[in-house]
Image (cartoon, rainbow, N blue to C red; front, side):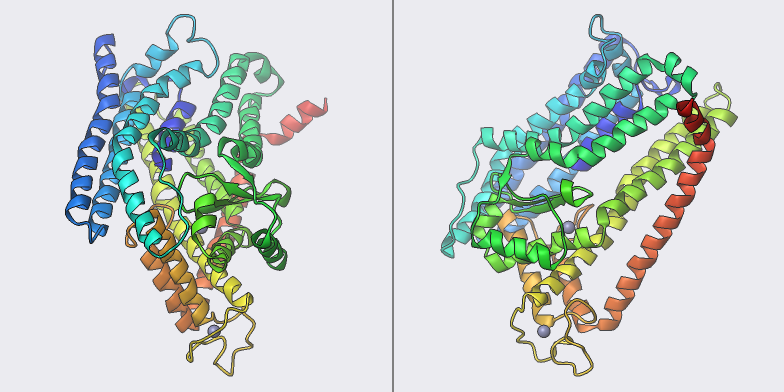
Amino acid sequence: MYLVIIAILSIALALRQPLDGWVLVRPREWVLLAVVLATILPPLFAAWMARRARAELEDHTDDPIRGQERFATGMFIVQVLLGLLHGSLLLLTGWMRLCRETPTVGPWPLVPALMAVFPFMLSLVLVWIAVYGVDRTIRQIAVEQYLFRGRPVRPVWSLGGYLVYKLRHELLFILIPTGIIIAARDVIEAREAPLMRVHPHLPDILIGGVAGAVALLAPLLLRFVWQTQPLAPGPLRDRLTELARTLKVRCREILVWRSGGAINAAVIGLFGPLRYVLITDAMLESMEDTRIEAVFGHEAGHVRHHHIPYFLMYALLTGCIVSAVAVTTAQHVPRTGGGQEVVYAGLGLLLLLKWTVGFGWLSHRFERQADIYAVRTLALLRLPCSQPDCRLHSDPRSAGDPRHGPLCATAASAFGDTLNEVAHLNGIPPDAGGLRHPSISTRSRFVQQVAMDPGALRRFDHGVTRLKIVLILCTLAACAWAGWKLKVWTLLDAIWR
Ligand SMILES: [Zn+2]
Ligand SMILES: [Zn+2]
C-alpha cells in the first residue's frame, strides 16, 4: 500500500494543478461525481473481495493458504484501483483546481493539497474498514495455530485498534513528512519573486533543502508517529546490544514497536545518532530469542551494507534524470500543440517505472544481501553446526570465519526457518512476493542455495558491488551536472555578498 500512498501524495506535491491539455472532465458537477466514484469504488470492490476470501477461509479451514492468497491478490487489485482512480482524479479532472479556487481556504499553504488528497484518504479508510474482518480472521488462524504450539500470543486487534494502526503506520507515516515539504513549498512559492531576486534558483534550492532536512530527521518523527518505546532492560536487550556492538552497528535506541499483532522489524535513519532499530511487540512475544537475533542480523545487514544511502542515491540520480528531461522539454518543446502534455505523460510513466521496476529491482538485491548478512550473524553467534556438508565448518579449505567466505549451511537453514515463521505468523502466503521483498520461499531458498554453492555467493556479492559502484559514479556525475546547471557558484557568491 505504501507505493500507492506515496504515488498519490507525490502528485499533490509535484503539481499544484494538472496541465491544461490533460484535463478531460471540467464541469463542476462531473468533477464532483468523479470524486464520489473514485472514493466509493475501491472500498466496494474491497468489501466484495473480502467476502469471497472469507468464504474461502471458512470452506477450507484445514488449508488457509488459498484464502490468504485470494486476499493477497484482492488487495493488490484494490491498490491498483486506488492508484488508477485517484491518480486520474488528480491528473485528468479539474478537482485540484477546484480545491485551489475554494474561497477562504484555497490560498492557505498546504490546505488545497490536503483537500485534493482527502477523497483518497477517505477511500483508504473505507477500504480498511471493508477488509478488517477478513484480515482479522487470517491473523486469528495464524494465532490459533501458534496457541496450539503452546506459545504466548497477543489478542487479535479490534476495529478501532486496526484503523489507528493502519492510519499511523501506513498513512501518517508518509503524509506527515510529505505535508511538511508541501507546506514549505507553498510558503516558499508565495515569496518566489523576492527570493528569485537573490538568486534565480533559490526557491528550488530551499525546497530541496527542506526535503533533505525532513529525510534526515524523519526517524525522530517516525518514533512518535509509530507507537514505540525503548526495549525494556533484560536478557534480550543485553543480547541485542552486545550483538549490535559485535556487528559494529550504531543506533540511538532499540525500540519496541506497538504493532497490534504484525510480526515485523525495521531499521530507520542514516546515521548512528539518528538511527533506530524497531522490533514489533508481537515478534518479541511470539518468537524465540535466537530468531529475533536472526531478524536483527538482517536489519544490521541493511545498515552495514549502507542500503539506505544507496536508495537515496538512486532517488537523487533518477530525480536528476527526470528533472533534466523536464527542463529540456520546457525549453525546446512549444507550449501549444500538445507536445508538452505528451512529454509530461511520458515523464509520469518514467516516474512510475522508477518507483516500481527500478526501485523493486534494487530492493530485491539489497534484501538478499541483508539475508546473507543475517546468516553470517547466526554463524557468528556460534549456532551449533549439524550439517556434514557445511562449506564453512566441514570444508578443510575454509578458514572457518563466518564473516567472510562461504556460509554455514545450518545457519542458512535456521534463517530460512525464521523467515517462514515470520510469514506464517503474519498470515502471508510463503509464495507471495512484493515490490520491496522477494517472496519468503524465494529468499529462504536463495540463502540455502548460496550456502551450498560458494561460487554463486561470490558472483552475487560481486554483482551487488558493481551495482553500487555504478550508482556512486552516476550520482556524482548527476550532482556535478545539476550544480553546473543551477550555477551553484553564483549562489555561493550571492550568499557571500
Ligand atoms: Zn529487509
Ligand atoms: Zn556450518
